[in-house]
Image (cartoon, rainbow, N blue to C red; front, side, top):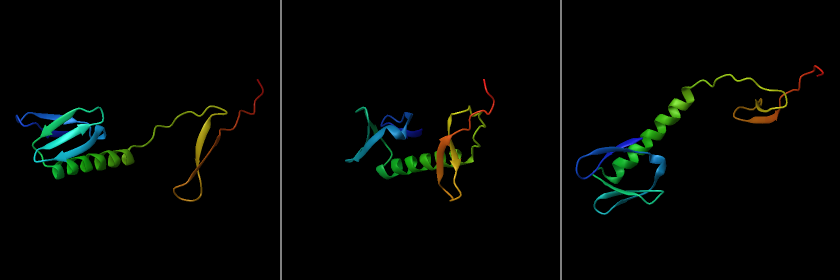
Length: 100
């Protein structure tokens, strides 16, 4: 979330993923994907910078989180790393060799 300021100086948080467009004429207006509009005191450039910093922070956090190990069931589709960096293959996990 990014924190912006309404014209009455009250601050609120908005999800930048829901911002469809930003207008500056002369007040900065945020229009969300559902059509809701907010007039804020920050300039268009400031709002764009806040959004860029937010997204950079999300990416940074995502890269630092270790995925939880999970149990793979026989026949379940899994992703296997390929020898070429940055690529992967999808395949089924091996079925148990035991007969049921």
